[in-house]
Image (tube, rainbow, N blue to C red; front, side, top):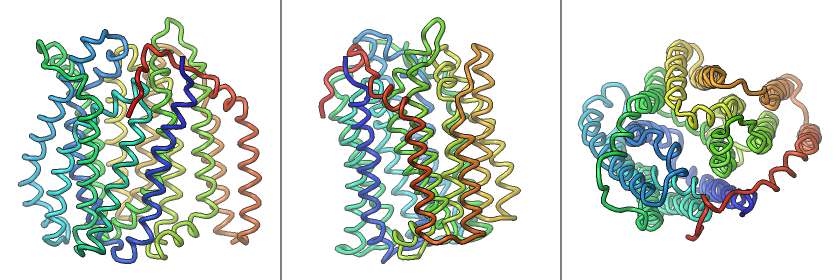
Length: 478
């Protein structure tokens, strides 16, 4: 037996370590590059995300659905088939997108040659990093938290080191962000080779390829819808406003992404347990609810802190260049709470072979988000784009809960989401209207955080007692 909390510590190191590296680099980088460069990177990454979406779709839900329950031989077959699929799919997608983006992007956005070159570099990076799609999923299912953490921190270190290199030692500020992105993806490829190469062998037949192919359409529909939504969002916002506005918006998303990384630390640690509990005849998700309460309380805490101190945090980190991102970041971080809804419901659908319903819910949510985005961006700009993401998440999570109810009714356990959204809105409004002093806000924040800790102390104690079966977690070596 091994402690779930012990593995979670490693998973926490991943987002915390990578975020600290990015935080340390941000004030230095923003002395040279600003919203226009970050906006160009946001567009390039959104285009490259189409490659990743297609690669992800090529393996379906086969790995989480079957990997833990199969013998070593079949696990090797699954892993090998998945690596082959993502490599071929990503390369094919990049070759298709390369001439299309070169022809179309200049007609929709005011971009220069450096941006077009940067888009091609990000496409290359998406292909190079495609094996990590498989590797990361296997590492999580096997509980190899240390390897996952080393890879994640290594990516951030490589990305930011190359960024600074291209800003100061080999000055090419227009390409620095793109070069860092590609370097980070290449590092993930090297880790993937070292981490799972021993598991790979030549597939004996096409059985697992067929299983993956049978699930690729609903997964692909959902993955492409989400990636397409991000691309449309940034292109549409850039067309209505400007590429620098996209940079402000993508900077606001940065704080949401950092919060999501910490959220994912517990999510990765508990995912095998979530699936295991979902496969029981009468699942009650005792461990899932205990661990997920900590996640939701944590996101609530971050949301409350940003509602009170977001402006000061952004001002310090960016030398005041991205202060306009403050209200957008509050909306995005608060909205992230909605994405925590329905964790046991999702596990239940996937474990019972109904994973396609998760993809359908995601697709419908994206379509709804796109419709609202098209309406809101001309009216409210980046605030409208952030609001459409919240609407997207609300529809997706509501449908996941609804679909799972057809299999089994699960108890309502989303009180932290309701409290977090309400409290964040109230505190932000209080700050804007009353403009309280820093010490007053600090006192309120400390008081609320202490109350949250007292409220979830039982869940924290239960979480540290959770344990994994070694059947699924062997040889966690870097």
